[in-house]
Amino acid sequence: MAIDIDLEGKVALVTGAGRGIGRAIAIGLAAAGADVCVTARTVAEIDETAEEVRGLGRSALAVPADATNGRAVAQAVERAVAELGGLQILVNNAGIDLPKPLLDIDEDGYDRVMDTNVKSMFLFTRAAGRHMIAKRYGRVVNMASVGAYVAAPNQAIYHASKAAVAHLTKATAIEWARHNITVNAVAPGLDPHRIDPSSQRRPGEAQPLSEGGPVAPAGRTRGDRAAGRLSRLRSRRVHDRLGGRHRRRPDDPVIGARR
Image (cartoon, rainbow, N blue to C red):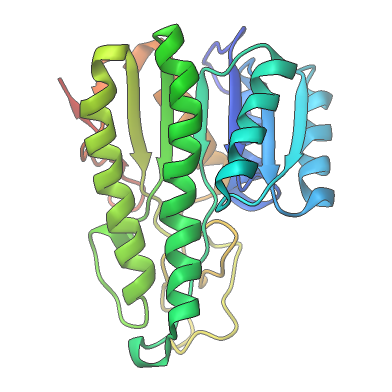
């Protein structure tokens, strides 16, 4: 995928980068010139992503980490800064889905979704933000979902988590604007490449996207297009975009608002 954005000299960290949209984002950023730290739980998957980044002539660092553990997150960020020479870009992409009726979800399931989709974002943003604020520059992009705005059955907890992502994005953007840091969120629609075999929907009905989680067919959002959107949010061309809600397309909105 070719991206006409110059990220030469920038270092990016992508969570949930072992497969799917996360891997596409990491490769897209590398194609645009960034060095990339990729992190997820599965070592083999992030190693493959890192090799693809290196194949594009960029430096890569694969750091296995539990995105819901504060100490592991801090160590991942510190390694990116120390071994790649800084950190200007953060992509909070880690996420899971739990497509069940509300009455069938137990506390453990609720905690898993909220910890992975929201807590991990808070932890990585806080850890990376300390470096960005010190350097007075940063670009943070969070993976939200159309489910943050459009409800569907059997998605109550997932959609609640993505609504939290949207508001975390807006609030952090306002708070950090004075530090020359922008915070935005991409809200994907549907991914045609992932299918949820346990879904209770009829064939062809859609289910919201979540990186690392199942999604029903008939979607239109693809990982490479998401990567392109994210790269543009990190470029100087959109330096004035703050967190809010700005829809680019019905099926591929970007949360953002101009100053």
